[in-house]
Image (tube, rainbow, N blue to C red; front, top):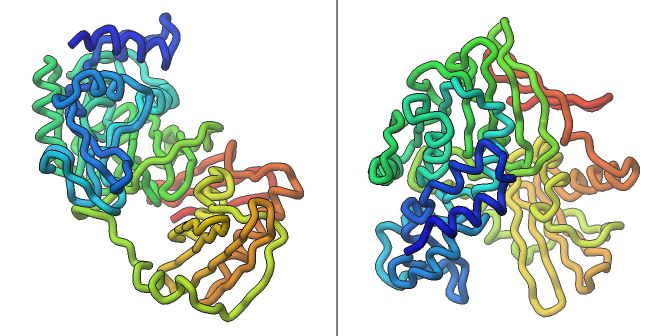
Length: 377
């Protein structure tokens, strides 16, 4: 298989030839790290096996796209041939190369930087090793299988970074000039600040949002920075084989239930995850909402569910029709969404992207822009 030609094409798609990331992209065999993956199909998540179709493997592995390698607790490496999973959430993946490079660029990595990254499949670790040399790279993941297999695949292509099974929200194994997390967190772990060297930088995303946060360590042990203008979404940190979904019982209760409060929205129906800016603003103000959607002919319905028992259901027949909204529980979730959409309509934008960031040594994070501010803890 002529993977080198595919890798060079990928590098040309992601960066310019003079970029310091061109050679890492052009010389790293991504297919080694993703021999099998899950893809959306008619039956739900369907297993794809690279060896069964080498050409499709090369085309997929060297496209600038994310490849899902685990659904719930089912890793593609362990799945039976032609396996399918009817439903489930991704719990591990190989992030699209362009976004990996974007995160590294936001880290402003110098030639002598010592960097901690999250492992996943190991491909992002490999790019960093090609750029810096493997002795400067530490790669960690909470999943022992991922660390073991990524280590074997890195070794296969001649790279030997420091690998460790670590819960990234806890203590980290060393001190670093840069910490780059391709899993999302809330709040920023205080252990990151302790592990950053003076002047070091962290780059991460906030869980449930599309916000990339960069922050440089300050003399008091905290950090200051900003929310970058790019949008990105990563899976949340997890501590078990799968993510908990505490709203499943509520979902069964309110699929079609009448609400305590019924209204008609002034705006067309919005499925919040389709709008980075609105989703990020809402998650900062009301963290933990589970968004679901369904289509029945021309009728579209979205649900907002919260572990505290709050819920909203909105249904509209036409694309521009005002939806009928049912709400229940201790909070009016749709009203919270409407306030954000009012602000967006009035001001033409929301203050989340470009906000200033300040993190205290204990990990409390404050975002501010103009007269707007919010504390994330």
